[in-house]
Length: 194
Image (cartoon, rainbow, N blue to C red; front, side, top):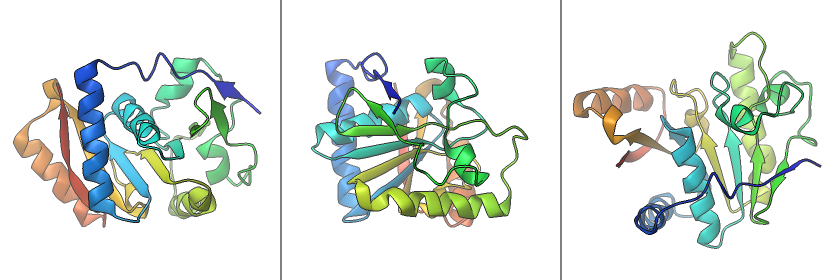
């Protein structure tokens, strides 16, 4: 089984850590007993949020579900042989070899894998729902770095939109929230990272 060290990716300032802890509390309050959270717009912040759930005592599965931009495969320079979400969507892996352990015993990762054609079909969207359902019983929380189109977020219990301050615009954020809600995503709110 493959394992990665996540320490460099989750390094935070004291203020940043407090902000993420506060956000975890808010999300837990909003979701209640529901467990699956999608986050759009900022993959690295999504990862830090997932890690923050472990600090709150939860066992977390982080899924890099944004097939188009494989941020974490690139960060870890894992290459094209790494199994991930794309393999499950294409039905080439039933899920047994997808989990990547980390040096935090309460956090596992499923990377994107490689989707050669870069296209997610309706059938593959349904496979994403099945992927979530497969692993949901094994974790306290599943946090998904979701595609901006909402194809994955609509299968989650809630969605958070995370903007970097330099990319945030109030009207654009309102329009994007409406777009996601029109696709049956349960948008919990917008977070702006300074």
